[in-house]
Image 1 (cartoon, one colour):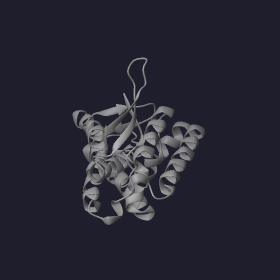
Image 2 (image 1 turned 120 degrees about the vertical axis):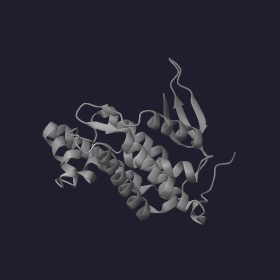
Image 3 (image 1 turned 90 degrees about the horizontal axis):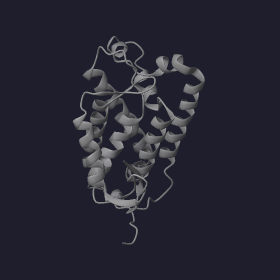
Image 4 (image 1 turned 90 degrees about the vertical axis):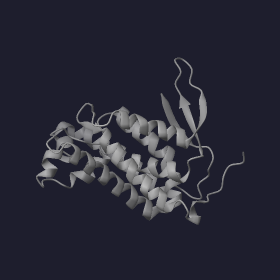
Length: 220
């Protein structure tokens, strides 16, 4: 198992305020889920059949900040913190916030359209984070990602080029295309990950030649 810890090749020019805000909101919403239980989850997660009937469309947004378990939110927030600050630095705070939210909406809609009759709740920040990763692989493909590698009882830190690490992650999503991974109280769909990732790739390509992308690098 690979856990990305951050970009070892790049130093951002300021505080990743929006990334931190998004993480804080996710944590607060998850605490509300723990207090509200299944009723809260079913009220605010996205259920494709309901969306297709024009009901509770606001859940396309609210479901992006919900998670099914401690491991679910922990994994998502680790990935967001590993890749989010650099993309926020490249885009600017306001543009990054819009990009993150719109990427999440695109991802959720992709899942709704892929399985429009499903009544399985869909929730999680994975689609929006996939958009961030899609932008990262286009903008900073050669950056080395500090990664925790699990090898039985050994846990070395390795440095993997973003194009390989994120590319491997995306290959897994393609191999599992159309499969919904069951979690405790809902579902997270690989098709949502793919939709968010492709949205990020397109937006990353549009930004790639911007002068703002030249953030200072660490010495080799």
